Length: 539
Image (tube, rainbow, N blue to C red; front, side):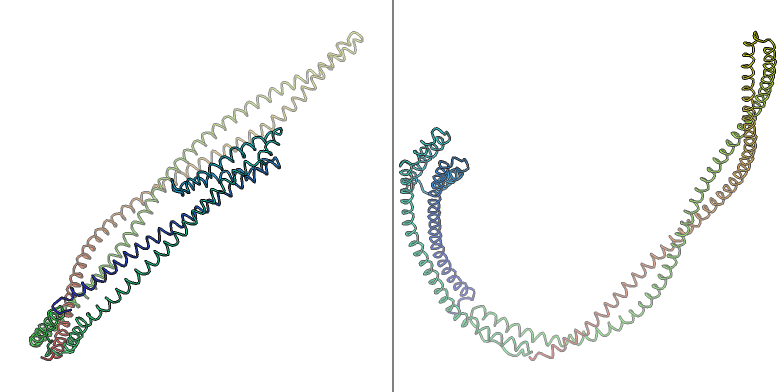
């Protein structure tokens, strides 16, 4: 290939040839692989047809076996092979109708086989099962199954299935030949494409070595000398392709580097002197800023401690106020409780006085009852004397006074009972009188204690009122302290904000000074580096 062509055209043409060969090889391979796939699919289809033919035969045999078992045993369970074979036959017929193309010889043979199978099911199987279900016609069912009609139908569909199988075997042989031919063609196409691709790649490798590798070797050698600091050499003219243009560009660049090295030497000396002056000034400013920043830091730390102490004081005062307010609420609750207690004591005292009055009234009534009992006792004694006199008089009267003696006896008995009852009542009244006296004493004591409790409640109420008043005064005082502390805290926070601004400004100034110092140091290092680089290059 001549050097007048560009490398992109050369490489593009070679890659295009490889692509064309690859596309042609791939096309042939795809075509032959398609044929292989078609032949493989056809063989799979033929194998499925053969499997369904076997399933067809097995389904019919199962039906015949189930029918014979039913005719022999007469049990319904013996018909299970017949029923399963019948269902399997329907599935196989449906599947083979989709596998065998319509209008072909296999299709006609399969239709005849299905007709013979259905005829056996209708005329032999169903008819025999129907007749065997009735005991009177069961022998007829056995004779129907034993006759030659069923065998002829079986032989008929078996012949059709064998013919279909023979056709499928011949078709499989043809497909096997087609598959082998397609595989041979695919192998030839792949090997031919690979050989052509190998030849083209070898030609491209030779062209790349002559047009690219050798010129690049010369360019790399020249670049290595430049990297070592030799700016005195030049590259020969490498033609009109990209490598030739690269050589001319490198020559121009090396010439510019030589001029730059001469100019850089003078500028670097001036830069080094300026950087030294800037660095000295930056160091002085940095020392001043560091002192200012240290002072601001100390002031800020002090103000921070003051702020923290003020916050703690405010917090403690708030806690004291909360405690005082809780105490005030408790005092008010205590006042209400004491007031309620005083009212309850007054009510108890009034009730006790009322009870005492009632007890006194009851005591007076018991005394009146005692007087009545004395009168009753006198009456009973007089009645007893009267009964005794009447008995004496009745005894003196003799037989005529006997009835009067009975009355006198009853009067005496009644007088004795009244006297005994008055004695019991007198004893009960004595106990009641003693209980009343004790109740009067207890009631008087309760009245005295309620009066004393009322006096103590009044004293407690006065004490709690004084405590509540002092707590409220203390709460007001602490609220004033908190207000003053908050005002002081606001002032300190304003001072802290100002100090923070000053500290940030100092930090920014210090950072800027350090950056200037670092930049001056970098400038010095850069100047020294440039001087070193300038010394490396020979021109």
